[in-house]
Length: 212
Image (spheres, rainbow, N blue to C red):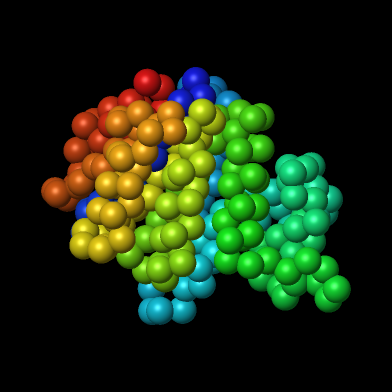
């Protein structure tokens, strides 16, 4: 990922087994080593209240900051400037501006893809989306959309989930079958089966995604 060969990693394991800890260990060590990277984090809440873009909106809003968000986004969404006001409103959890271009299901995915690629053009970007098992189908489709945008960009996209999400095997089958520059090793799946997790083994797995 660091060299522009993006990676997608799914970490599966039961609740409390250490999925978050594994990623936290990696990010903490990278920062300690002086790695220059963007780190975006969002998670889906339990209880069926999650919206499709909820975890993504949190991750990107906290990264860009709420102050002057529209102006900041304009510098990243140069390919889709007409969607900037609506995207800023989405990140803030507000309705689209009256009279502006509204976001559709497809254009929401588009603006997140453009924003992520623009961040990766600045520096290596690690995006962690947790608890995909709580995400609605549209939220998992967002993860799939970002996964397909990873090749040839400095992006490490990490998802965590409990085992058994029907959409997950389909996603990784689709990724491994691509022929548009996405190597077989790009999509990686790691299962945590013991608690506490083997941080050394899991860390090497994530290191491989970031550096190889």
